[in-house]
Figure 1 (cartoon, rainbow, N blue to C red):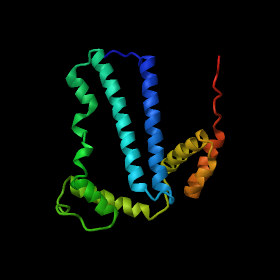
Figure 2: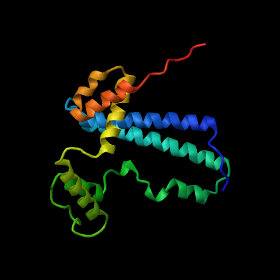
Figure 3: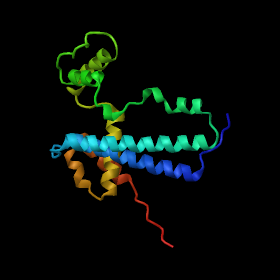
Length: 188
């Protein structure tokens, strides 16, 4: 297989799209964490689907490039992991409902006693519900939240927005924001 770097215009386009998707992911976390977000259901779904659609644009841009340079269609389908694709228009499936039931400590839905995806997702939901009883202590999760919230607060010049997050996340996000030097735009 040929090892060539991604062409610079492609790299920049991919970076821009990934930035946009990450910004939407930060908004999902923000609406999910905020007690002022009365409309969290609508806004988290909007921003999560925006992020998913933007990442789909990244995948299709790269797939179009692969097609352009002659990657075999079968190879490209493998790279795209077509078998994992789900259509949002179909709505939640049984295993999604099972995970919610597990998260909310409700009875397993019909078929939840069987082995398979439904039972696996119900069990996952139960484990996540148990973990949610304890403070978030996974450093990688706290660090990711702090980086995204701190970056957003710095970009928007709104450090006060960090007050709505848990104290440990807000403090770390303030340190992240404080460590960021915003680049001055060079004008010619």
